[in-house]
Length: 126
Image 1 (cartoon, helix red, strand yellow):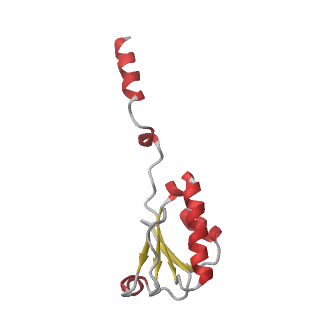
Image 2: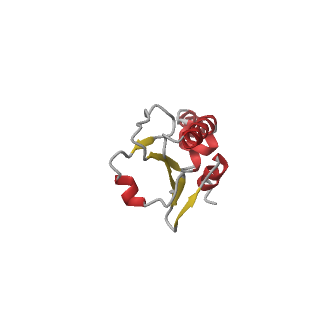
Image 3: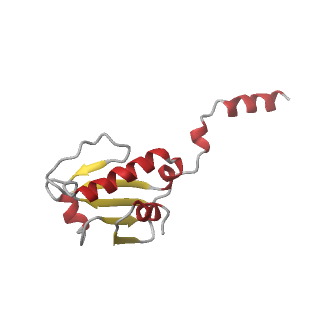
């Protein structure tokens, strides 16, 4: 009886985050040019969706890469890297913008996107 009670007390003190499903090894990188209003809007809209959805946040890691010389402040939920020196562009070589790169243990892919739905599909591994 005492063992059960101690076990129950121990479990109650473990944060619920421990029980959350582990994040997958999926990583998504979205390349945009923030000086093009439609592409910055895509980032802004997806940032809002991501902020409001715990499910999206647990799907995969996502990072936006801004290739514009117009620097974007990094005060959003989704990290945005300002690639003013072209380091990320040389590494990934996006063919057009906006482009999403999906990387996981078994495969990688690249595709041109237009909507936040396509970003969600990447996070789901589709």
